[in-house]
Image (cartoon, rainbow, N blue to C red):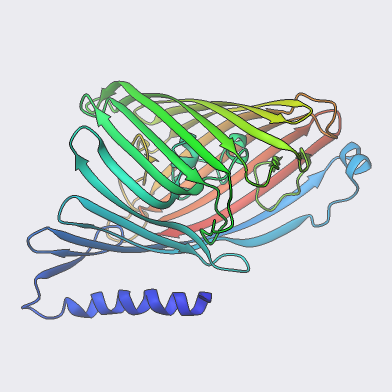
Length: 404
């Protein structure tokens, strides 16, 4: 299906739902809830349409040492449509849910989500099947629309975020304890694994919320996840960009061949206290090849503070953090400033082996986020990247984002 046929298909569905609400006898309500929502009057059926458009621009500068080691930059600046997505999701009869999402950015349409779930099953909880995010890494489970920096931490590069499979997930103790466990088959961007043979992935995650106080807007999240991966291709590769999708790659393993399996472990924590928040993750990777054992690690820690008084919005264990709603939207009837967030992050990735051209890379990043309203955000990031023993890269990036 070409991108235009797919876009037309989604537009037709969207238009049909819009015009259906004009009939007073129609048993559906159509409303705006940070997205267009169609809901039956008896609340047994709901359908939500939304999308996002994210545009990035970046400028980069190597120091002399880095230029001597890797040559001049192919491009010192760039602009890209980072994301251009449409989705629809819904609930049926209170216990069945679904989501379909595609991305039109880049040269071809890529499938992001296509899954169906059944909820409130006794003992088990929820079962979800299709193409969706594996339960691994807090920053990855948080939508890219709501992350604090323009790019996630370096632990996001060690495996893909979404996959084909089945997952069981449940919450206990009034959602203070949660778990997700899934079995997957490696899939490409079109969710196609028809040619897979023996490859498979097993991923599990447990999280807890030992502190949650809505009155003081205080929350502590902790979690751990493990993923065992047996690639059908017998290959594995890690390439970490310096906090920008526009930047060149310096730290890379290249393609590691004759891989039997990969073991990934990730530990995560986040703490919110009013306008202040801290988030950190630590990942280890063990790659078991026929003739060698590779061991990698990656971590980051970030701080953020809303000088206008807002707090980060914790959605759930599996969904991570969500939308920021300013106390006073910029302009309009409220004539407010919007929400302004300052952020700081340090991260490092260590390949720990002299076999690679670059063994380690660390990054120091500063960020300013301006939320004009709940669906519009401007971002500015500065990143200083130290490619160990090879030189430094400075980058300044800006993002304009609308999502609903």
